[in-house]
Length: 68
Image (cartoon, rainbow, N blue to C red; front, side, top):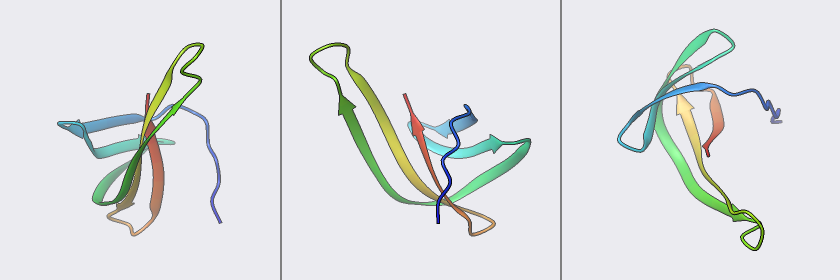
């Protein structure tokens, strides 16, 4: 089961790839990227483009994070 959390998080990247992020005061190190994709919507009004990453962290928890 997944849970959606809409609060912003601080993400540190190496290049354009997430390396660590801080969520609810806890720092998570990305062990591996399981998947990545780009979503583009509303191109006819104001384009919204997000880069999504499905990541596995050192604690073996899997998160979906995105960058606007």
